[in-house]
Image 1 (cartoon, rainbow, N blue to C red):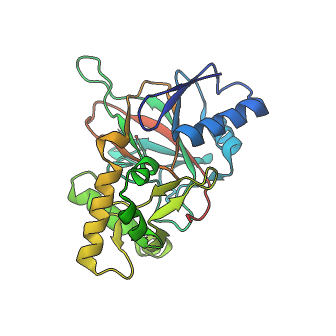
Image 2: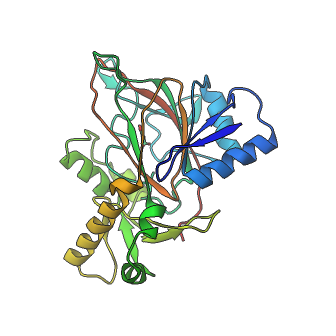
Image 3: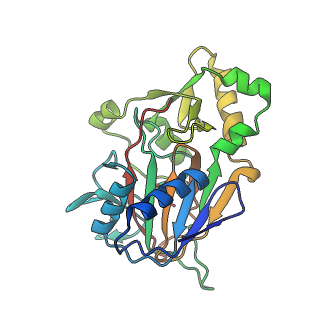
Length: 288
Ligand code: SIN
């Protein structure tokens, strides 16, 4: 197994591993270590059926279910389809996944530790270029780069993360046509409070954990000032220095660590350009 760091603030390619075949304990541990060290890892040219993806997810922790079941495979509910493909006039998968900067499902009390995304189909333009890149930003590096007085100001502050606000913000930007949540969803996905700076559960490294649009308030700080601080921190997280851009190839198997990264899926393609990803996630711990 060979690990090639991207040279950016995060990201590494792992070579010499066939994820469809058996993996011994040393390889499993090395993959987990590389994930924590680099935040995002990619294995190229992987032929991994959905059942195997669930096994790989379980090698990194406990497989978690996505918060909405509509686009999960009926016989493999851990696997969510992320896709713009339509059949009989209906989306076969979640079409707006990741279209604003975020960490996955941060609107939950216990958001997932890691997400695994396998590229089954990638959209291609007329010149053969693959579209639909994903940007990853190191929220840990963003924290490291803060001025000491801002670090001190953030100490102990919490922000409210809201599912409804996240999807309203995406819709406002024209990046989501998701139906407004039903009463049951709004109740189940009620806003939660998380620390603005979270420590990584394995490495202990601090990272900013706040997103404009999704974070609606900071208790103890007046609304306009809180929203301005959330915007400022979001800009710092997505500052050019923190970013790694993943250019997908069919068969890419990408894993990212939500405890230290944020990400953004670029929606620069449209049907008949098709994108289909299999997505699973590893259960996390309460951000602290
Ligand atoms: C996600 O945010 O879960 C999906 C990212 C992508 O489709 O690139």
